[in-house]
Image 1 (cartoon, rainbow, N blue to C red):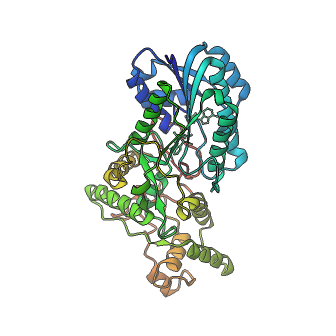
Image 2: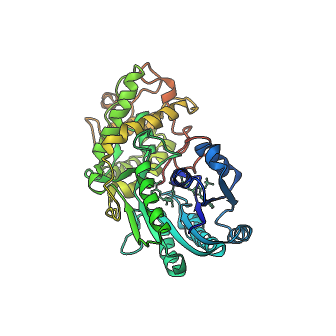
Image 3: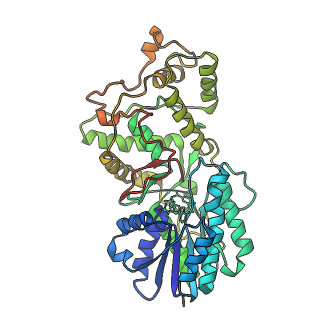
Length: 434
Ligand SMILES: NC(=O)c1ccc[n+]([C@@H]2O[C@H](COP(=O)([O-])OP(=O)(O)OC[C@H]3O[C@@H](n4cnc5c(N)ncnc54)[C@H](OP(=O)(O)O)[C@@H]3O)[C@@H](O)[C@H]2O)c1
């Protein structure tokens, strides 16, 4: 019989929900252990789960990028005869280099597997990966995908005694009933972009498909795999993806906008402007044009921010390869059935978040809107040309009744969506990561 379930990354989106489900499913008899790297992580977990659950969880303090520290943590943990381990700790950023994320995503996976091996006579390991990557025959779109796959291969090669299984999930959003989620990354920066209505357009392959899954359904599938592993049944791979119910980007954007408009109506505000979606070819043309024509008055910082956001998302807005769903007891729900709750949860918390107020970035918005989507699309105009004025249909630089001050945040002052997750008592960062 399994005496211990040990989870890494328990303070994260998936890990915290897993811990909650495990605590409910195994009220006693099985020791629950979390590997957490800091006091902040432990605080976050306590806030997310409450005292009733965390009081029965043993916390092992260890930064998994520190192999010696992980070995020392293992030495402190009493050895058990059988253990089930779930490895969820990772850096899920899409924009970082291999050097930045390999230490946790690859070396950290090895350190966790060693810790598990050292603290149990027999053990099974479930490795959490992404449905957007694969161990083999895959062209990796970023370092995140590459390192997740590398760790998966390494664990299978070097830890066969842990009988590794891989649980690969798609892009996770909030609970399908409540919308709740522990952090706002992945899809959430897109909600922010749509809600702020500061971008004159979005850039994507017109027919690109986006695969998202709700947190409760995903963790339900993971718990199913845990149950099988506890019974000693080996399942090589589970892929928790929406598959046939993934949505074209255009539809996803329309669904989010619709949900935001419902919330805005309730606040007595008008609907959001429709944001056109332009192709990457057109965007490249624009970028080149800015340089060639040496456009004056452009907000360079805002442009760079837009470029950075776009570069992080680009792989998934151009290339919608994802592994097909596998090993599940049922299909993922259609995103249209739960997106309103997901958007509402995000908007409710986001609205409370303190924001600094300043005029919208004038240069970028005006130029880009003019060139890309206005009646003069494709041509560069000077900011004071009459055509420019008539094309300018982006939010005004000063707050109005319909665009109150708190919704007008300059790119320079807005929290950079590329920065690491803000630790806190509730989701507070919009990040470009999975
Ligand atoms: N969320 C998704 O959409 C998604 C989709 C596909 C796959 N996945 C996979 O699911 C797993 C969990 O993702 P998530 O979304 O829950 O991520 P998350 O919310 O960013 O949480 C990551 C977790 O890893 C921990 N961690 C990071 N660096 C660590 C280190 N050096 N030592 C120890 N712990 C460390 C974090 O601890 P701190 O609290 O201290 O930061 C946090 O608990 C990852 O393996 C990810 O690749 C996620």
